Image (cartoon, rainbow over all chains, first blue to last red; front, side, top):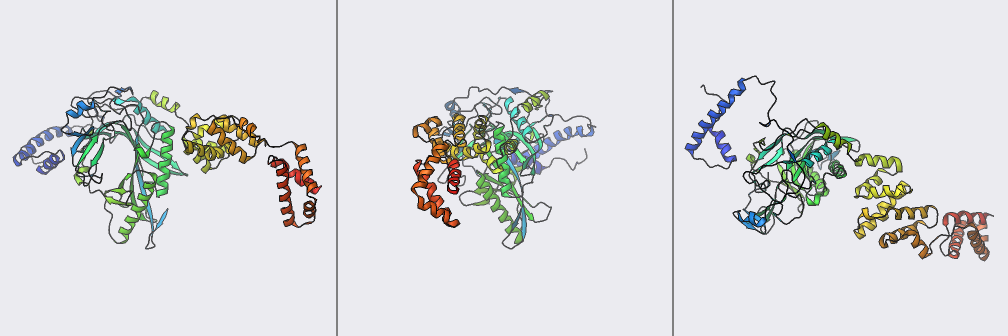
Length: 103
Length: 488
């Protein structure tokens, strides 16, 4: 396959890994760049099709309006939930120092 | 509106607002946890809003109905279908590490709201889930300098509607008017309690400036942490001045998010990392599209209440009140309903409006009583007695205050206090004649005197008549009778 300028690069993989908070070794970045590029190339075959008349699919199931009544359901027991957390304090989840305001 | 800078040049502020409204459904957006403010921390949580593996969100049908009401109220187009996306970011206030929101297919698009004859475009209104609440532990209570943070997920998953205006706003006053109208309307259609102090209505302001007359948009900054209308006005005015100063010094405005400090009265950069803006939106696979049916839309349309703008116009037309009086009346929860009930008992609308917004409101503020519990007949009776002259206006105010505070009938109070005015013509004439006979000198001076003297003597004689009637003479009858006797 000829080199495709739109092909996934090492920099793309590093960027996505950083966004996903994944710490990858150099050899892993190389492996994933190659493997992900193959997957994307495969998916790119769709763009060879004429899909002008095909409506966009938001969901694989031909369903809409799956709704529930606005009725209260039982909640979880707080002590039980917090017991599963790495740390808690004052009935709340305790988390490490936050480094910036919410996005 | 033009802003004149210290350097003397003319500028214009350009703003669009993002308003987040918590919808007042009984349960959360995608799960059956109660949607309550002020519960004990982490008591309204379940696998769905905690993002536990294997949980499946299901959309609340009432939230769809509320969004459609908003669609009707602000003249939105409601597309055939809308879709939920995942907005991915790492932050402890979202346990799932993504927020479910609507992205390129919102439930409402292209609406508008009119402020004093100016139409403010609304780009879109989309549904999304609220985040949890973090408390920062440390000396300042702020994020910087905290040792760690504590998170309460009661608010995570509470339904939000984000209403995004076009950059059509041209002054901080207009921004405040826009939010006020939005709030009043959202409240009237029953979709939110719109309490800024409890965070159920939150505003972010995009602000830029440009030279007066220019049609290009300048670089904008987004201001967050606006917890009141005063903060909104102050922050926008501050930010406009900051940007004008930068530009006049030949510098440029950096597009960024800025935090308003209510204490220091300035905005400061939040210095978010660039990559934080790469949210990698993708369609939420656990939720199917929402396609409001024609039946549902027709039902919502049929159930829409009268909107505040329409109601104001009706009261101005039917009761002859001013725009300002109508706004004051509608500005207090339930007061307009109360006033309409008093008017239904036969009292004139304008009188009712003035008494309701002054005397009744003063009582409500002082007593913390609920307006919905007041008997409309109380004010109707007082106004009827004032109108037919049985009691004076000032006596009416006293009687109303006592009737409201003691829950007594106004007519009983008038009887108890012996307040009923003397309106019997014979009794009034007898009193006047006695006073004139006893003050012959004054009468002579009145008849011989110039305007100034006549005025003085007439005032004296009127006072004597009132004294003789123990203050209970009906002045509207007494005045012309006295004049007739003096001239006679």
